[in-house]
Image (cartoon, rainbow, N blue to C red):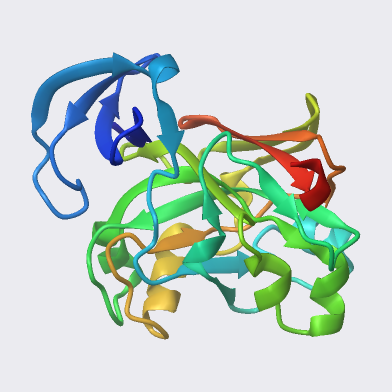
Length: 259
């Protein structure tokens, strides 16, 4: 089941997207908290503006260096346990929204990832228990001001600027998270092409580990890490993140004076 959050010019609403990614059947309420019921209203994806499929109620948890080849390309060792960082929910934007490159940074990088949306409150869960906490999955771009990341030491600023966490185009509730191809294209050229089969720490392990530090709430998002091939984006370039069984998240990157 694919769940989109969208607007036709009024307040945001939710809907179920068909397998072709063309039609949306509106549902009532917020599917994270209420039973999914169709309203009888249908439209097409082309007629609406897709929004970020979820706005985390409390937090986005990023996972660093969760692909061995990505750790190596930046000169880092593979972590012995999940490397977590927090991103504010003000960084979230949706498909088609611009990513604003801040004046503080001269190198802004893309990082295509599979993201996990948490569906229920969980704390101190085991990996097996963690599976029941998953609401679904979406595409993410963990945008990073690379030239600020290293000197800062911690990554809150480098990864937390407004617009630095695009999510979308919708939430897929039914897929195999260990068999997803993650590809990123910049200006139409493929720059990342990896598979979640290469994750160092799998998704149940990540949820369990995070839950032993933070209480996870419905709508929280965990970014699972990026494969090798990260690199800089130039103003005006469009970045597409594709996860094989979900779809494509695309955003254009701009400087303030380019808007």
